[in-house]
Image (cartoon, rainbow, N blue to C red):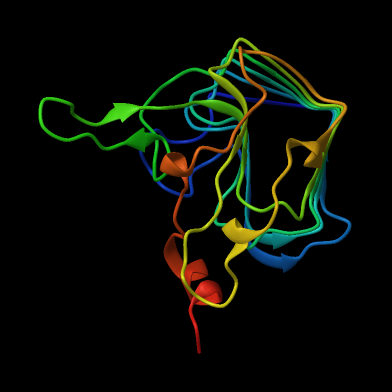
Length: 190
């Protein structure tokens, strides 16, 4: 049991309390039974990494999306029996804003309990309370060979979950994300 608090750097990419960064196959890696609270950006981020286990954690009063799959190349990860309470809006990177035009300026859309960029991950028995969107599904919009967004994406990929936020998932195309940083090469045609 570990406590993570006052970690992460607001508005600085790759500065999160728990972060797997381009680790490839990380079978056997996990974060389990931890309290993550009052952090400045996210609770757990998985980027370019497969097969990690994120289980039985509590994420409370943190800024931005709480549990975050970054680019869409993350696969085989398991998020199980986690609890998110009151993720707050705050300055964040990449995915948290929608750009307006005319009299409408950019505004913050998030946060979400779970930011999901690839359906090839498991979300089981997780709960989200007091957050704008419980499960936010956003898939890479590349026109390359891997067109993840064209696959059927039922909300059933998240099994036995509950949200108390007004909605359980958001699959509106206007909120689709892009691929950021070095992971962009994964989606480009050769």
